[in-house]
Image (tube, rainbow, N blue to C red; front, top):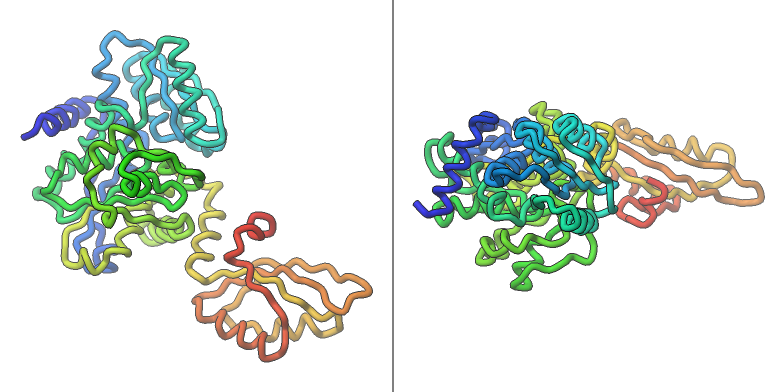
Length: 408
């Protein structure tokens, strides 16, 4: 057993004094769907509803005598640090992006109590990180990186220790969300070449793909923070050193809208609440279905800190990606009966979700913003064919991101 594996196992054993191992559960629905033996490592069921408590615990337990810890986090690392600050009776100063969901901010306060103070700084994580490091240098605290720290990586690897023990054997594949790389690098290092690891990133934060392509960590020009638990603009230097020999073909990049479909599916079918980053690994299996058929696959559901105020947006994005909801601009003749003529074209499964129109004088036509929900994507082929047949002019704006920001 390597030194890293020895330390990871020691970390896993030590953290049992704080919280129990998270469940490893076989999922019958996903196993049938993908014709494989699919297991979920339920990190969303940890005390802070993410795996981040592992790294925080391991790093903080090694800093004997330290009474001030500083961190930057989009939410999950913050909660892990806050939980451990209260448990250990030390002070924590936590920097979070202004855009962090309120649910994660509130839970951080609850977990840390009087032991933590929270600073909301920056719109993006990388700005928040710089502010936290500067403050820490001035105050002389211990900066606890969410991923770029050997002790944090070692602590996150305890997840892999549990997987192997709970499964009773090695899985054929482990699917890992990346983010800054702390958990994915720790788990991949534990398994080594004994198990095949797949790495998953959101399209708006594909920092591992960028780093592997360049041969070194690179800063992304733009980060989409929708998948806030994995939206990192630059992978950590230490995680990359552990992942640098991985194949680019083992990195799966998913669109933010697509991730929403798994969040909705797992909520509706399984009653499992996942945050966007927590759904990454499950959705990625669809890209390698033929590759994993008949194999044992473990998907790490990395977090369940989801603010239900975001649910309407998640449902909207899932429907648009699945093709069952579209928006279009209809050029409607300004004459009696024109609207009724349009309504008669709609099929029995077509539902108007949005309709905005104001009749304007001295014009022959008016523009109508229409949102349609239906049961299956093919219904739109029929609808648009009928519109073409009767001569209605329309423009599908569903995939027009610029327009969507203003009207959808």
